Structure formats: structure tokens, C-alpha cells
Picture (spheres, rainbow, N blue to C red):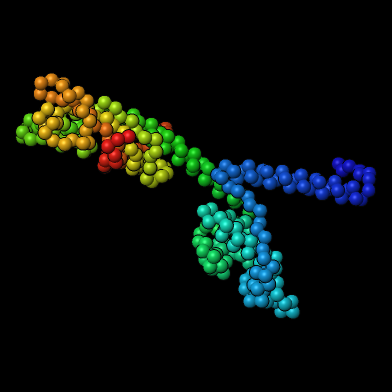
Amino acid sequence: MGQRYHGSVEDLLTNLESMKSDARDRIVARRQQLAGTRGVLVEEWPTNSVQEIVERELARRRPFIDKENVGTIGHRDTVIWLGLLALAVTRPDDTVVFVTKDKGFLGSKGDLHSDLEADLAQHGVQASRVKAMPDLFSVINVLRTQVEADQRRATAHAAIRQALHEYNKELMALQWGWEFDLRDGGLARPDIDADLPPEMETVTVSFIESEFDVAVEPSVAENDKPLRCTYKVDISFDGVMTKSEWYGNDYSRLELWDSDLNDQYVSVEAYRVLELIAEVTYDPAVEEAHVDHIVGSHVVSDSY
């Protein structure tokens, strides 16, 4: 039920204005809270130059329209039109969402009007950066969909990083050096080329660590198709080399660890940062990833 109000008209108007202001502040705060889940900012509308509006009217450029017996209409829409241009120009790295159902701003398919797109292009703004949506509910639904996709992507990437970390055990067991092949008497190539010299014998991995950053293609894992994951690993190798080989040549990419391992050999080490490309299978049903195999590699650095 309503309540009786006792007081002057001035006091009533003051109270109503205060209530309106409080309600507006609550609405704005709630919008910012919802939008902030994806770093969205609800901006104040930019101010317009009076000269810009007058020149646009004189040139009869949209949204000014000639109407019989009326003259021209479109001042309000021009303020909106120019404000949208200003907002898009001042935020070159952001997507601008324009909430409107006004057909004066829209094309036949609900996208931006071709004249508005032309004005954006004239200001150096790609029209694809300005999205027209009919209402705030549509904006929130799009944000919700994107948030859910981001959450799925984050879960997948965490599982992929864990799988790559666990795959280090498999990498340690690979052949990294040039080993003597008993079948033909030659040297068998390493499983992964870390640019180690063939003269470095009995190569083993003493340390391996995968770096955190992983580039995943495609970025969204929605099925059981293999993903290509590019990442870096830091590896230390131990090995031996004959004394005559070590002292008779320049191995600047190796380090001497023990100059007198025995009568014939010295102990050496190598440090490498490798960029690896792995095929990974991710199962979204159980949120687990598995490394299938390494499909590419190259040496990034000799130290880490």
C-alpha cells in the first residue's frame, strides 16, 4: 500500500530526486559488477561539439533527415552518432558495444548502418570493433557465454600444462646424444635434436623443467581432436668427451665439469632451452590431457 506524505512540494521533489539518484547509482553499480567479469567498462557518453552538429545538419548528413513541412530532424540522434564515433576513436584497442533498437543507426540485418560504418572508417575505426545489440539482456547473455568459454579454456589449459609437466619423465628417457648403432656401425640420430655434438658421449638429462607459458592451437578444446601445444623446456645434459677431443677443439657451447674424470675422458655439461611442439589430446568430460608425441623442436638458447 502507498504511504501518505506530509511536507512541502519542495521537500517532496528533493526526496524524489534523492531516491532517483540512489536508484540510478545502484543500477550503475550492478551493471559494472556484471560487466566487470570480462573487464567491460560502462562508459560515460562523450560530449559533442556544437559546430560538428551544425555542420552535419547543414550538409544533411545522417542522422539528419529532411521531412516535409517539418524541416530537419535528428539533433538527438546526431548527439548519439557523434558520441559513438568519439568513443570508438578514443578506445582504439577495445570493442564498443552500442545498445540500440533505433533503426536510424542500424542496417537491414540489425548491424550498423552503412553510413555509420563509413563515418567510423573515415575516423580510422574498423566497423567490426563496434557491435550493435538490441538491449542489455543481450549484452549480459553474450558476456555470460564468453565467461563460460573462458572458464572451459582455462580448465583445459591447466590440464594441458600439467600433462606437459608430467611428460618431462618421458623426455628424460629419450635418446639425446648420438649413440653408436650396433646394426650398421654408424651413429644413430637423437630422438630430439638439442644441437649436441656427436663427440659428446653417454648423454643423460640431469635436469628438465617445462616453462609455464603454453600456446594452444586451436585455443578452445571442445572435442577429442589433438591440439598443437608450443612450449619451452629448460634442460641440462651431462656427458663425457675424450680429452684429446675436448682440448683439441673449441666447444664453446659446452661447459667443462670435471677435467680429469679418468685417464681418457673429461666430464662436460650442456644447457639448452628448447621450444617443443607437442600433440596433446584433451578430454573435456573428465578435464584431463595426455601428450601423444613431440612433432617439432628447435633450440632457442644455450642458457636459461
